[in-house]
Image 1: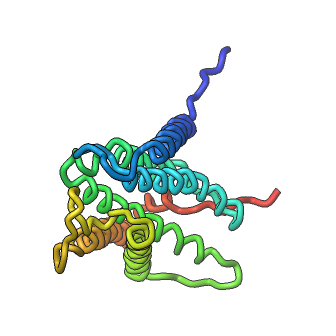
Image 2 (image 1 turned 60 degrees about the vertical axis):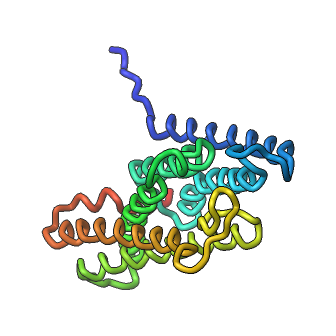
Image 3 (image 1 turned 90 degrees about the vertical axis):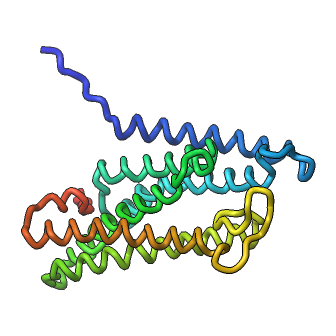
Length: 237
């Protein structure tokens, strides 16, 4: 009897996203080199825009391999569904957001992604604390409230680290990731200059809080589906 071949959709999607980011990187580098520093027609991408695309594509390509690298280093496996959500997020934020300009074409695209990333990082927080608590030398029974609180703090902290990255890119590479300038180059001041950053941090917290609340209820009632987000320790052969 002939066996039906099963498609590894996570691997297929990962290859597609990797190819998209790699092609976008080459495209962005070419345009970064050929685009003049001044005299770019209104509405057309500038050298600063292409610099941002290059840095984001490189970051995305590195991030795709980061889970595998960390997994080998610390002897754990990331659930396939969690990795799939992660790389789809990279595709939406980098390829669609930066390369295809969804941040400007789709209203609140950045806010939607930050809210989603907050929830995703909240799930990662649950996985991290579960993995760290699996220490044979120490036995600890953590309360659901503590685990949920850790997940929120973990997600918000990583959100702050991302804002550090955006600030550094704007400060030293002349980009506009924190939206402190209008598209015509006009610099914002006061509350207007920090609105984008504060909105990002707020929705990061909101997404993490919602997921942590759901996770808390799950742990409290012992439903068990949070185990799908837990890292699995690699068995030594």
